[in-house]
Amino acid sequence: MNHIDFEKLDILSLSILVSLYENKSATHVSKLLNVPAPKISRCLKTARSIFGNELFLRKKYGLIPNEFAAKVYPIAKEIVNCAKGFNQLGNPAFAGNKNFELVTPGLISYAYPKALMQAIKQQNKQLHINLNSWGCNSLQGIIDGNISAGLCSCHYPQELQAIGNKLQIEALRKLDSLYLICNKNHPLLSRELTLETIAEYPYINTDLGLGPNSLSPFEDYCRINNLDLNVEMTITGISSLSAYLEASQAVALVPYKAVFDLLGEEPLLHLCKLSEMETTRLFNVTEPLTLTLLSPSGQQDPDLEWIRSQLRLVSGTLL
Image (cartoon, rainbow, N blue to C red; front, side, top):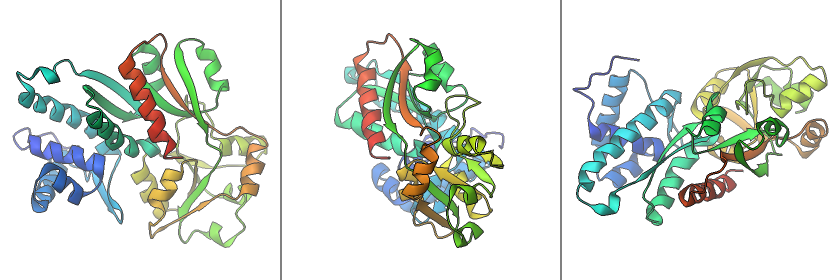
């Protein structure tokens, strides 16, 4: 990353970056911020130059933030929100906004900011949220109270038994459907799609799980059946996953219908739902992951409970 030149970094460019991250459409951002489209393009170009990174990939369905943009977003969001405080000076209605740190699975993290912010505005909640992708330290962050709530795809309840009463735990839904993603010209597509044929190709894991030793159901199936699966890497960001699979012979199985819907029209990718027969074979020997809502135990905060209810609501539209 370039050394940041603060003389060139302005609040409007950061506001545009934040809004593009949340809305993924320059046209929509232009209307939201009342900024002409050419100005949006110039500010994005400036931000890319300052950060030394593309930040967004232009796809058929809009601008998709990359992993670097996901790291810049919470910092930029905080700066923009702080700047908005100048408009709130002397207005008691904005005093005492509560801050909540949230984490969600990386592949579907794009879907939460806009939905949560709309709900906050519609219900006139005086809340500030900072949303990040689930990472290696997220579980401990929730236990320690540094993260207000998190969504994680994990083996429920086995992986959570050791945590005991440290967390408030709610299983939302079993992820018992799987979607294959690969290059549209992948040799796998000329063969019968079975668990065994899928395992013959480099595999991309797309979820960190609850801990570093967590296995996805497909990895667990291959372990149990002595299939030599080559897990090439873990990619938890949707833009990086899309770009990598477009240009490689690797494959991925994801449990989120939202990913299927988002990438379904990508011209260089093939996506399909794994057949019921193969899905049944898989889950006859291993358990599906469960999307699980976690938050620190002992919290009696109505605002946190409201946020939990919104996380449930948004999650229900993604599966």
